[in-house]
Amino acid sequence: MSTIAQQGAAEHRMPRHHFLNAAYSIKSWLLTMDHKRVGLLYLFSITFFFLIGGTFASLIRLELATPEADLMEADQYNVAFSMHGIVMIFFFLIPSIPAVFGNFIMPLMIGAKDVAFPKLNLMSWYLFIFGGTFGVLTTLLGGVDTGWTFYTPFSSTYSNSNVILAGMAAFIAGFSSILTGLNFMVTIHKMRAPGITWFKMPLFVWGMYATSLIMVLGTPVIAITLALMMVERGLHIGIFDPALGGDPVLFQHLFWFYSHPAVYIMILPGMGVISEVIAAFSRKRIFGYEFIAMSSVSIAVLGFFVWGHHLFVSGQSIYAGMVFSFITMLVAVPSAIKVFNWMATIYRGSVSYDAPMLYALGFIGLFSIGGLTGVFLAIMGLDIHMHDTYFVVAHFHYVMVGGAVTAFMAALHFWWPKISGRMYPEGWSRLAAFLIFAGFNMTFFPQFIVGYLGMPRRYHVYPEEWQLLNIMSSAGATVLAVAFIVPVIYLLWSLKNGKIAGPNPWRATGLEWILSSPPPEHNFPTTPIVEEEPYDYGEVIENPVHVEEEEKAHEHA
Image 1 (tube, rainbow, N blue to C red):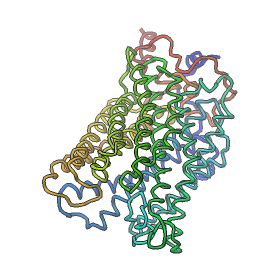
Image 2 (spheres, rainbow, N blue to C red):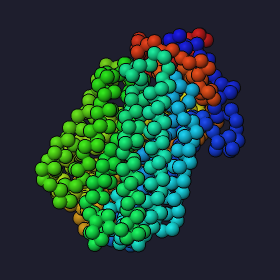
Image 3 (cartoon, rainbow, N blue to C red):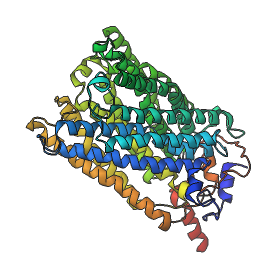
Image 4 (cartoon, helix red, strand yellow):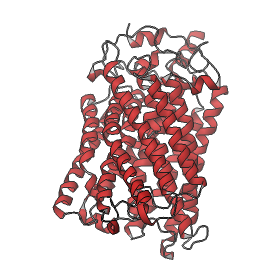
């Protein structure tokens, strides 16, 4: 039976039995083997860590609103920006889309009843919570002041903060990523429904597969690096500290060998989300499907060969720097392929500007700025001038917040009806999307300017001539904070008061949309057989969100 036919046959009502009410108790959730519930456990967890990381971000922007140290002293400021980075990167950005929507949606997309290893999946969440507990304990005990990069020998010898505790937090969370990536790879290889060949997989699944490769191959490197740092700090064995016979640049090589590919752990799943959203709200088959799929794998592979562009000022050979500079510009090509293909998909499509599409369009603009400024930093001459300035901070946030967080919001709004069975208020969701876009640009675009003018990052005092740009940035951060609170309010409101979504409120293609909303406990009663091509929208449907209401009105008339 074709996907579209099943969509038409599905009833537009809340199912009586679904995964949320199958066994409703705390024990049933904490011991669940259902990939959908594990995805929601991750959603609750990363929301908590987002609030912690956002609190530290607010303290940073409050301090930087004036040139003098009015709110925090230097040591306190070091703790604030270090904990902001550690919490946001290791406990929000890295697990956000892979752990939440990779768990919830990916098995549904390929017609599987669960992930390959359900017990391992639950164990991954417990490891994440265990690592997060160490992170929270680090915060309660005064934090860590090394920056999120844990650079040696400061972290391994000289810092007086809770370095080992913070290192353990990231170390344990890394095992959660490894197990999740392994689980997803096996699931994608072995549990696809009949008819879903490699080039019939949704592009979100391609993004998750490429991400899983990086998780499995790259995360052990950062785990070993942090372990060596903690060994040097605890046992005073010379590994990175020159005073003990170690090499601090070795730490940078090991750290960035993982941490630059880790950027793609955060962004590749988001690119998969954007492909799904743009196809659904343009009512067109994604342009250049094969090229987008292969570009995801290309990014994952090339990402392991560009770590040296973080070491241009470390004494690295100028010839090695030239090679890393060239490869860094080369890795921009597959990202550009995605952006051009997304724009070609939108061209002459029947575009519906609902909240997921607004976030997707925001992603394209913000990620493009982040990617292009990354090319600036890949050029050795420019990087030497802008290294360790707020230009780097702005570039990083345009990729991570403008890219990964915006894509996360697109995914949350796109699949919220499938997760909850309810629709959210469209007006409020569009307002939130606009506020996030405006607040983000107001926060971080001035940082490009002040960084190019020479303001160093990680400083809590600065010359008065830079205050206006910093005030703009702090005001934008306030708008951004409010903008993130608004979706929390209306999504929670929708759980009880939102309109019933039905199986497929967006009239999208894909196996997840033939199931009831919320989905049944065991997903598919029988294994589906897929015959059509992915994103086979056929005839263009105007304003797909409101089609069903219009049909009912016509029947009533």
